[in-house]
Length: 161
Image: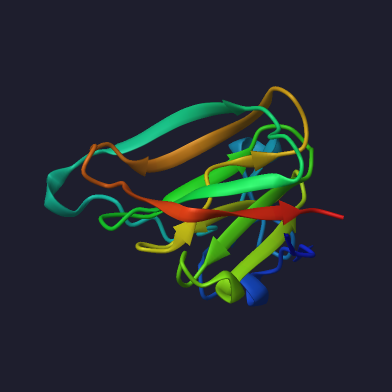
């Protein structure tokens, strides 16, 4: 069994895979006569080539049994995919450079105030959560041709300490 120890999700550690979406350290702009604040430019959304519209959806996820059997990795060749939690609960991010190379996998623990925006063609595991009914806003390309799945010949077992 491969044991990955997730590291904290930071912009520097995740840069090769996309953007960390968080307001910590971002410039806040007061709007609406001072009754709201806005943070601009939190992620580089890239989904609209070919005139395909942006899709904003909500996913509800549940935890997988442990150790987590990694059987499938996916990527999106035509656009980015952003996940932003809608509650303040930690969750897991699993990415890799090559799904067939177990040494290329990286695991991150995201806070409930951090999202990720996977860059085009970044291999990642579908949503991994610790708690029932974990909800996420998802921003991606609205087209079925933006998904490539790779089923592993031998599942990897991910043991989270």
